[in-house]
Image (cartoon, rainbow, N blue to C red; front, side, top):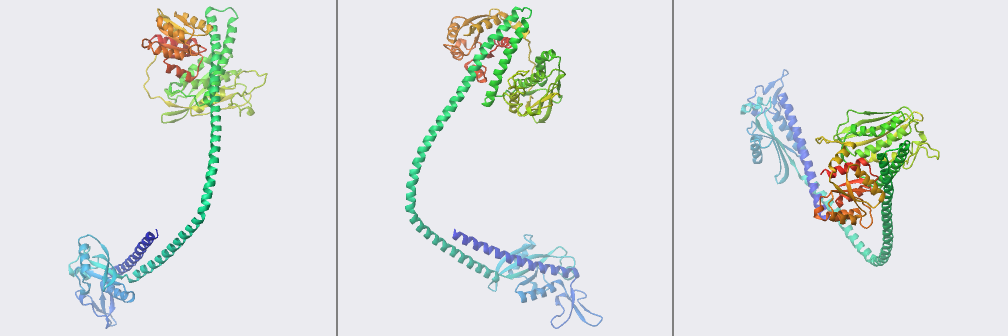
Length: 635
């Protein structure tokens, strides 16, 4: 490294000092050229004729070379070249820098170029360069030689026109010879200084190496002792790490077991509650179909309302747990905001009319007609808002608005608002409004029911859709609840799709049910009775299997057009039974519909993976059940 530093500093010093020499030569030449140009602009100067200053013999062709003043003094003309040459002679005598004036053709024989200068003038004539540098020896001493091309300017033809030059012609060069001895002495002096400096550094380095070796020898024993201590410590540390790793592993297994237990509990809770709920809603459907006595309709409506409230509670808890576990995946399906709002209003219009409330809508016309998003979650969030607004409003009405906030490329940000004229909310209750299991009135005497999950889930849905949720209210003057959601614009071409109402679905089912035979795989007796009654409504006949094993055996003996399969059964569950059926080639296309109280999204996926064609969750909605039957039997 020291050797490289010496080399680099020597080279750098030479380059810098030579650059100084070039700069000085250029400054001197610039001075000479400026002086000559000044003389050219003034046509030369007249000076007295003396013993040392005679008339310039090679200017004899210039008229007015010699003049006599009115007082009798004799003057002679010094042209710019003569003036500059005298200046160059003085500068060379005083400072050792010799200026040069040379020409291709000369008036003054002293302006004849030497061999090197002649070579450069030829280059100037060919247009290869306009200035040149070179380091050469003059009288065995190094000089920096510098030449710059000289061109005819207006005023030069007074003296040099006789040689045949015209304005703009290259006729010679101006230059100088700069002695390099002072600069080379400075280079040598700098090299000596750098050399001594690096020598001292090298000696210090050797001393440091020797001192380091001495320290190393003394530290060797300490290092060995430290190594032994370090190995002992490492052994202890590895033992501690092993113990802590085992403890961490136990904690992780415990956490995973707790998480599995939580998931199992939620799944079992959902299944166990949905199963009797299915019986409740199914029996209600059967009673309504068979006809009601006076007063029974009101009682059945109360039972239906209580059952749906319990189902909403189950769905809310499951949605919240899936959001917290990061397992809730939003759908990306085509949707229409006017259709979504229209469907929501149709569901709540009867409830609003019962309280003599106006339920109005306002949709921004700038919203694109076709969008992509999760219409189910959007409707669920709006349903939470509208239900609360109707619940807490006794007079006036409820306004549902949808506005376009921004449009960025293929995305839109929409703001959904539900404004009511109800009782309003106190300022101290706003902070916890969107918290889980929080209600404005938690007292035992509260007038309105609810789980305290609707608003919390709405905010979670909004944030999953790239937005947020909030509210503003004033006691006695109503409330405004809002949430935003980012949706994509659907550019795909739209094909008309047939839409059937519940009555049309049942009529179509009845039309294709002749000769169709179904297998109902269900272990719960009441749920069997309800399913059979619903099938009888559309003229379908079904056999019964109490578990999956009985179903596989029955399919091998009897032809069936469709199988309704429960998931959770004794002996053999529905998934295992479906896989066993699909393993038989002759039943590869047999339609199988899951009809189960296992309503998680991953339950649906497990059914699809096992080979089922469709999915109906319990409690069974008759319209959804009949639509699934129609889809599978129409194929």
